[in-house]
Length: 459
Image (cartoon, rainbow, N blue to C red; front, side):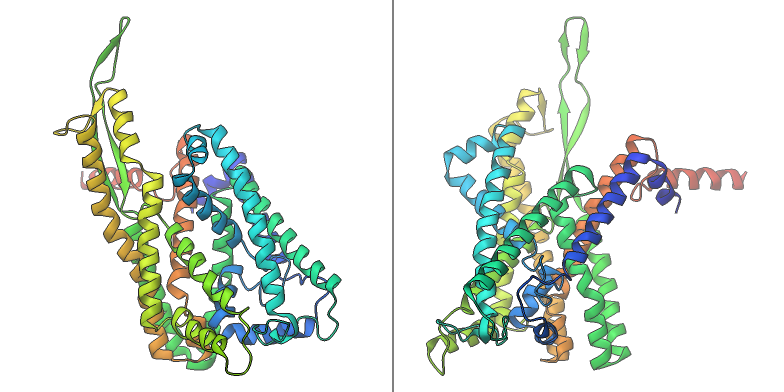
């Protein structure tokens, strides 16, 4: 409680926190404001279909239920995440983007600007696709769809364009809100918005379990929730510290260096980004399958059924294997982008440092790469396990009921919630430490005080 009071004692930190809360509230409000030009009577039907899992369940999780309201923020922040993936992959193969990455803050601004452009383009395409999926129950020129009538017989090209433009504008506003939170609030704005989306669905999921399976089942899920929280926090805090020594050097009459430091390598270096990236890739074929010309018993019906059974259902071996491989692959990919052993080894050498027992230069690079690979694999497997195993167990025990389907993304939701919470708390801790206050995670001073009190009482 004293730490929480300290947060509100500092005007700058208090303003940042209140601003972040205000933006989250604004986001949640926008998630319940329906777009103009639609039939509002379909909203209840959408909510019922989302509770049954499938495509709508997946979309609802990452939009915070906005898709079932067909709200202004129905697209969520996923188009921006998809754009980020595209830009990071292109950064490996396009020399110009690679140059921007090496230009520091100036290059990063250029990459961010292009990420916005790509994100808006993706949002426009997704808005068009989603509007079509909900148009006339999917019985348009190409068939497919989700079985609801968005326009209720009052369709016109003008209404269609209005809905698409509103969804795209809603995404652009959401992207701006995320960037403003990053600049003026606490934590990473995009992650905070995703956190708000997934957490907002948890109470409804618990309520569905209690209504269909009883209080005992809900308590069982709550127990699993608590166990996952403890395990995730434990792994998220895991760090491998690589010691670095700096040789003494004389500049004029002053001696510099001679101190020791360390390189912190997190066990889960990719954080929740690997989960978010993998979900975006999984989200794509699920969405595309819905616009296939599915009429009567043609081939498209079979494709849609296969994707719904194997890429959406959390108990499917194909889903488990495909999603698990994606999570591990993106964990390695993002970790490699965040930490480059070659650049790190070169930086250590230029600063006159070395890792004890390892030669500077190429040997240091190989050593860092080997350590990074060794700690990334167990971290990635753990994250994949937390995302998949609870969903598999709940899917098997609760079957195809609404309760089982609504908890299909249970592990993913907890991972994102815990990961974003820890990163935000660490940032608040950093602000408190700068002003000589104790942080939420800083227990060293508290332990020292406890030892001092214990010694005093012993005397």
